[in-house]
Image: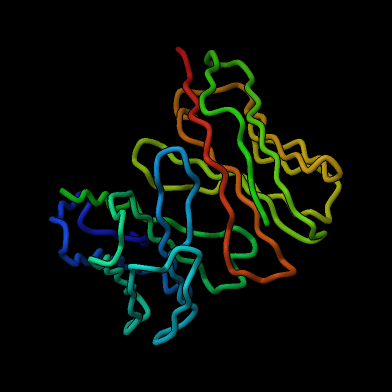
Length: 116
Length: 116
């Protein structure tokens, strides 16, 4: 089945450690996104990528890094520089960035990161 | 600044009844898209309905319809004949076409409970 797979679903991290969240899609979509979801807040864009080897900062990129070496993969690293990393992280994709204009984002099931 | 406001953190509806979720947004642009996304307990976001700002006719998708009031910057979602499977978080989102920010701006969400 086509879709977006995020792993792990739950992750615990000690302060000062980097952690990488995986996002894989088999939809052949060009564009991929990372959002952060906090209780009582809407989704906020961390990074997005329109094509392989290209990515752009979103509204809250500080303390995060990404890579896009393959079309189907867009991992997110939460670094120790992120001051408040405990959150729910959602990965999404669209056929291309323009397709995002029509709202056709496909989301994964998310990863919950807890910093101990 | 572009903001999306959902003033109802929680709503409930009796099964088979109708419920309306409210959303207002703030923008100075004339061209944009508006969306309602559903996030069920599985946490995977799903697009429910989309409205183009240039269209006066309200969008409908089966039991889901919107009341789009452009001058009032209001975009409510009506769910008719509510079903147990409609229970979820609902997010209103806005996409500005003119600035091309490649970003959906989300509201804080409304949690809908469907009472059997």
